[in-house]
Length: 108
Image 1 (cartoon, rainbow, N blue to C red):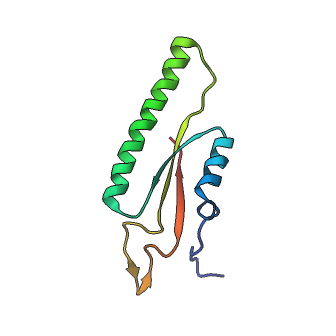
Image 2: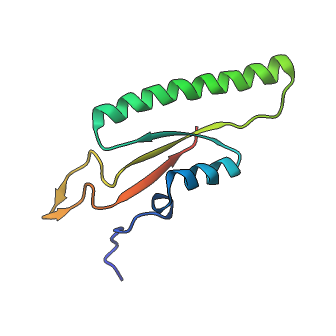
């Protein structure tokens, strides 16, 4: 019907950061965020958040192994970047990059 175009934002990209946080917290995750459209800044954010996530997981492991604590919530990273980011800006004269914002949810 629509020539196989995916041109609308995802449901998750339409809700506010607070709602997104509440949604995934409610599912039992601890959300960490990486957002933006500047490649260098997003890469720095990702490195920073990955370090925090790894430390969080190590803390969970320590508490489980040493203290027997089985009550924990694993971290996840929510990556929000423009659609088609870092790909071709145009294909056959049609704008691709940034035509809509999507949310990519990566669970670590």
